[in-house]
Length: 263
Image (cartoon, rainbow, N blue to C red; front, side, top):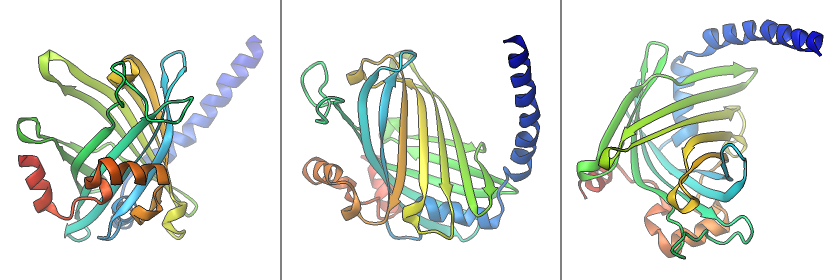
């Protein structure tokens, strides 16, 4: 057993060297991968939708707490073509009961509140070989501007591009509390393939929503892109049409976002 353990450790050490080297060599951005990133994430001006489905599990037990489904609607705008891009964004995610698939009920018997952002305003800039991001969200006194983030990397595997975006959250909340969580996004795309073939894997560790008990949890979603609201799963379309019509499309422009920020 000791011999097998040592051999395994030696093999992992040997494998780690080229992986780290590849990350250093291919983690940076150039003009092409920057433009491709904006196009895959937010399109070319018309709305795009990243549809997601996955699970929420308790940590460390792994017990299934809820299924999760939702989508992110985005639209791109280039104030400085090739160097600075805006992403106008809306997102909503629902929690569903693992046994019935119905909307999850909270302790009060009411439907659990979705994770819903009326808008997010994201700015992408190319600074040398780094992608810089700024995120604005919230309204009134709760409006926040986070950034610049510089952790994003891109790696090329043949024709495939893998965009990795780790997010470390440590945000002050009312009553002296803090929101602390880690998220990681891996977009895996072949730019020569249709957008419907592109995939995102997202994982988050942090506190569960109150309706799920609020304890530590792991959320994991797999996402794919569609370019029309009509192509969303029927369960999501029905929820939005009945309860959340604002989410039928991303914000039209920056003026709409500024109005939401002032609300």
